[in-house]
Length: 215
Image 1 (spheres, helix red, strand yellow):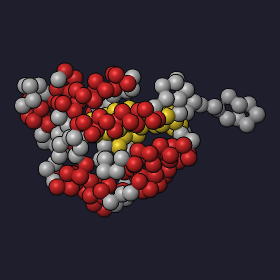
Image 2 (image 1 turned 120 degrees about the horizontal axis):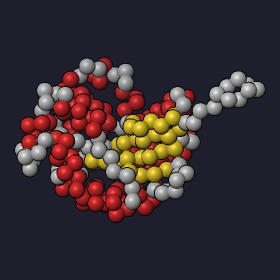
Image 3 (image 1 turned 180 degrees about the horizontal axis):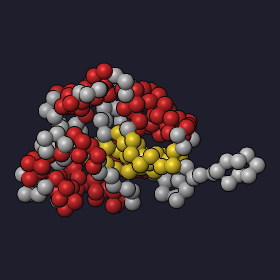
Image 4 (image 1 turned 180 degrees about the vertical axis):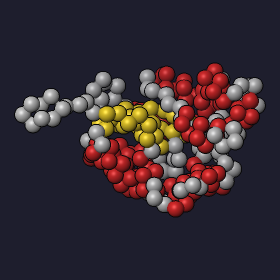
């Protein structure tokens, strides 16, 4: 406790999972109570974003985090149209001065079947190549690092078993963290009339959680 100013000093909080690029859309009508159209509406908006837009969104979000006491943030981008967006997000973290773990999200199949998602689907080889480039360029493994890279395939409906396995192998090889988007799996799949469970049961006869853990 700082007796002179009667203040208590606390360590910075950690925001363990975030999507800074979604921050501009919080008050948009088509993002409220959109139901099954939520992901399609989100994809339409993200498709129009430039790298500069990603930088502005990250600046806004990171500043809000710092004002709320969070000095470390895990930020995931899985709708990848412009790979330069990752550079813009890194620059935003440096501009604000927040400690960042940037997760290179990915999808190698269309999660909803809507054409708007086709522009975000990438071949596994391209995903792995760019992921390794990000790691080589930005990842700092020091314990006091201000910037690290993680890898994180998106959901059961947007990633093949090949993507999951190859990404896990790359993360192990490069010594970076592997993230799985559990929250989105539950919110957009399992909670949506349990759609993910029958789907996952067709994949090696495993439930969604078991497939994520053991396939």
